[in-house]
Length: 393
Ligand SMILES: [Fe+2]
Ligand SMILES: [Fe+2]
Image (cartoon, rainbow, N blue to C red):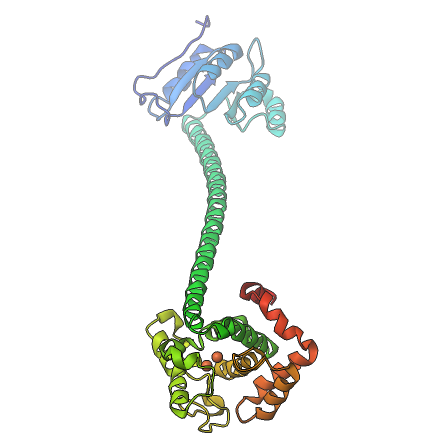
């Protein structure tokens, strides 16, 4: 005995697999190794034995071993030195020292230096030794499970971080797509409205650009009144569409260079209602319809306003602003029968009818802009772009 590697495989123990812990006994006395093997015959472990440190190290290299119990007094290498090597190369393996009372100070030192986990004294008590090994193995597997869980948590955290990052990118992409689609839709919406107004203005070359300029002036007055962007966008579109109903008025009346007869004037006065009726079926223009219908109402509610003779706050606010913008545009533009009127005449007119025809607030806002900008107010209209105007705020 004692030559070469001695491995005692206990036939009654379960077949070796990954879940069966391997334990290794190291002692130069074969009788002790045999006794220890017998002791663990009924335990669910794989027992290995070696009668020298070098054999034990070779076994550790080759087999899956979770616990080493070594004698201290051995001829070649003492147990404490052997267990130190085990600690260096397999730090997770549980190390137990088997020692007689005479080497107790070596063992205590080994414990203090962290070389070994437990100490078993010779002669041992069978039950105590089995319990010690079981407990040590429990510790080993608990530690390993803890490590596994820690690693799992770390890995899951990493995966979550990756997922979060991917999601963030996806959300950003989607948001951008939605933004682009929204911009496209809005552009299509405004082009449709422009096509409508161009159809109207084609009937009378003298009014070309009238609707666009009314939209611009109304937007600028609304901004002067500190209205929000949503309101300004709505009033701009309402401006573009305010005279859409003229499409239903005979061309002969619209382009007539002379004064209109009362019958012809009555015909013209139908355009706000016709306009509202044209726009009503278009769902996305729903909030524009009342603005169009009431853009010729007088603020004082007199019967000079039409179609419904509304007064004050009964008239939609955008309509009251459009009426000022409409009047300014009409007066300053050339007509077949007259040149455009100078701005100071227009200012007088707006002042004169403030409170009767015009909402004083809307009139006042227009007059404030003219006070600052004078003729520039009219000239700026040709360079106006609703998108950049809205983004100024
Ligand atoms: Fe009109
Ligand atoms: Fe008009």
